[in-house]
Length: 262
Image 1 (spheres, rainbow, N blue to C red):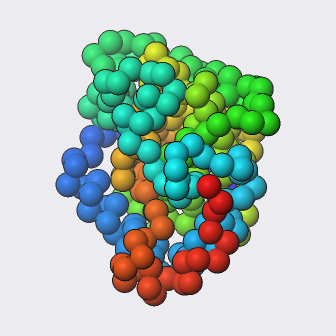
Image 2: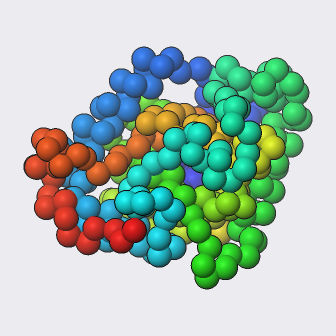
Image 3: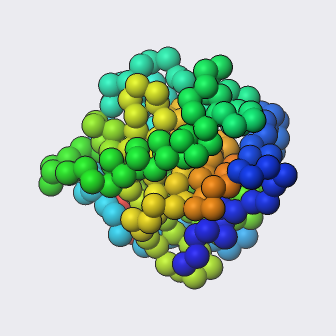
């Protein structure tokens, strides 16, 4: 699978950072609603068995919390408590609290390096998680299953599932619905900065990043660092299994086959 085509962007500057721009809450909510509608009603969703069949390549056996499976997303409070980071979320709002300005990246009002250095920090963080040793009885908190597409895309065919250990290690699955293939995700949370970075299939690039708080939202933009030095925002939209009485649940497959064990 050529992941690079999902993380490339042209731009007026040499980093492609003109693509890093603020998105309003209304825009995110509108785009998120459209993605979920297309997902549930456009042929991708096939009940709990759809998730179970496509996101089992990495499965820890159980997630923490009564009645919680890999479809469930976490609140920021529960994720922060789980991994021991600050209870105050650090906003990674790309285009506002994370800004590319001239030859600097400004995060929360402070310069953190050049775009190359900022991208390398993400790569180093993801590599830390990839190398992490995980015990057989490791406990995990589910961050959920998300549709992944370009920031204005309404019908993405790529999906990711993420889990978080107490040490901040990230594991999960990247699934492409067009090719019906899945790959392993590895990454890491920096507990001090609350920055999360991950890669797919052990490749150093593209490197994906978001704040921990981003990954507890129903829809959010994330940042992607490409091998050619360009960056792009992409959209993550949570696609939980619908409630029992929802129209999507009743029309989108049996919703019971292969339900995840908790």
